[in-house]
Length: 178
Image (cartoon, rainbow, N blue to C red; front, side, top):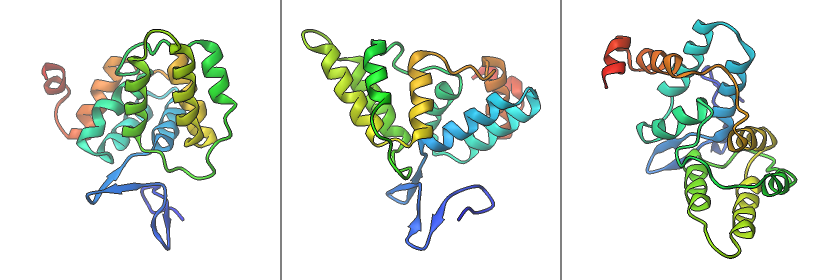
């Protein structure tokens, strides 16, 4: 069941959250859901509200990953993933339940970004398949669009700055200066 914040719960504790040192870890499914809502609306205020709500609900360490993802970017830049590798990863059967943490996606992207040399394409494909095997269907769709640069949702820089300011409860000008 979901609580008033939309978080998944089960009788066994938090389902859809990975607790490490009592810190809830954000799931790509949560970011994908926000990205979908932002993409589905034309309202700037609704976009800011959804993104700000997302940012308020994540750990400070995850902000550096979440903001680029919601902007359709990857912190590591281009991963060097060929369409064939991405297509192969998309065919990987999805996980039934969300369990993949956002930091794990970022770490995987970091490993993919540094793969070079002989056999690099196969190594990137293998890393992507391993990542996608732990992702739900919604997460796979989000990650594939993110990798391909096809995550168009209108979350431009100015909108992200406004959402960050709203989430932090500070004036927009203060965020721009930071």
